[in-house]
Picture 1 (tube, rainbow, N blue to C red):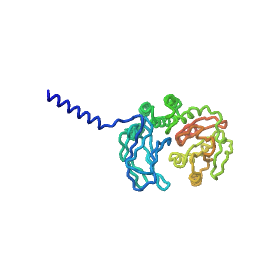
Picture 2 (cartoon, rainbow, N blue to C red; picture 1 turned 135 degrees about the vertical axis):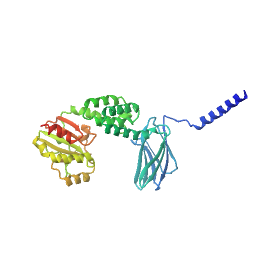
Picture 3 (tube, helix red, strand yellow; picture 1 turned 90 degrees about the horizontal axis):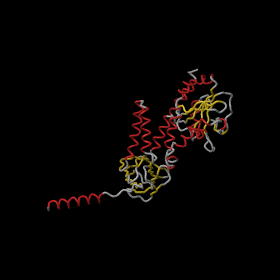
Length: 349
């Protein structure tokens, strides 16, 4: 009897100790702990959600830093070190609760060493590896199922937007697939649909683009290579192939070489090529135009305008090609590669 009582007392003590050692986790909030080292003395450190709705700044440093966000779901966060008006940042997905980060700043670059209590941080790497594997095996069916499952799994947090955006990119020429995606994500709450890296507004525009009755590149104010802001002069072509691109887009630049080789074939069919760049810096864009001296019309969007072609058409991936006739009717849209346009409208003839 004494042995049983003693064992019971020992079990009770051990259980009590174990219970006291584990602090309760409040899953309705996100308490972030950042353990850091740095090769500079920063002026300030900022921890913020990556859509910059809430942020916490530190000028008096302790180590580790702790801060709380009123987020009850996983989210993407930024840790930024500021020094002499420059900043060096690291971004990472974290679960709600009490995620802990160990990182270091060296040579003006932030390195994430370890993340605790945040499996979603590592899920991002698995997500990318899995998509690469599907691409390598050309298994589009399994890939689509995987992406839709990820949306369901993260239906109530913004990580689902990564899966939605990839699904939309793969199927931007397939209205049925796009409608399936829209039907799913439009049931999400507004903080996700209009939040971090959301594809929702662009998806709506992609599905509505066919309803545009009067789209014309000549109705927009654009910038030419000389820096003149104006509406382009309309030509006598019956069809216009609009190329949406930017200088650092490697597939865009590669396609330009193909367009240049087949430009006469386009002209024979009465198709005029018009490039519209989304580059922010005029100098980068104009230097590229000057260097290559391509003979088709090229313009740059003007971001002070209330309406841009990219926004109105819901363009999200580059290059994107829109073929329209002289009445503004869209004949085809969202080809990822110029070879697809050539196969459909030149080599078929």
